Image 1 (tube, rainbow, N blue to C red):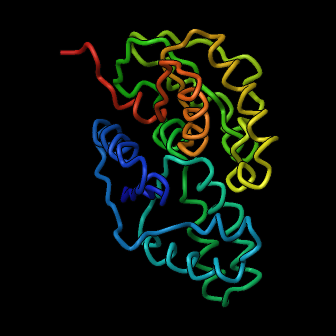
Image 2 (cartoon, helix red, strand yellow):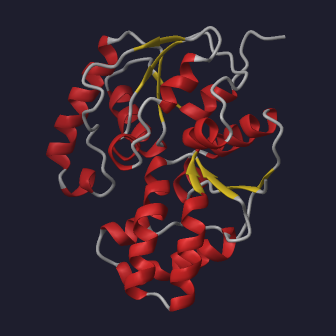
Length: 245
């Protein structure tokens, strides 16, 4: 199977360790992962703010970068949802027939990282060890968009040494929502305050999620409150082998 990593522009710029973690896990499972250098943004920012025509060249570039792969894996539920749900909308509304066809062929091969592990590779134990108290936040795109369900939790429960605790009101939004946090700052801040209260109530050492954008938002709130709670992408926990020989 030819596997490509779609790292996303946010991770490539701010959280490159997450991409390395994805590769670490997949290589540990015996797979080779390519990184197509032509990849850039999936166009989510453009699409969500009404610049649909301007997003089409990014859809075209995405197809060019990843069309030859059997599987495209991304550590972002948000960007996976954009590709699978909105690229067809853009191709059908603004693209040429050849683009519509290529998007339709590629979209089923695009997978969020945890669903690729559980649904495509059929594994939940990836050989990870992480002896810390961890709480998982299901981001809106992973929960409501991709409907990942308990796939991330299945993977976390199989991590050796982990103390996985439940997050109160886990299905509530953290208040990020991309430009929502900018356009509706007061509402976003209130939602963030509730979320940080819930995280702190668990006494967890680490907060993890399937989207670094939401972790960045919550992590900022936790930092401003002077807490020592770390934020880590789920892939980084699955890549960890702490305490093993």
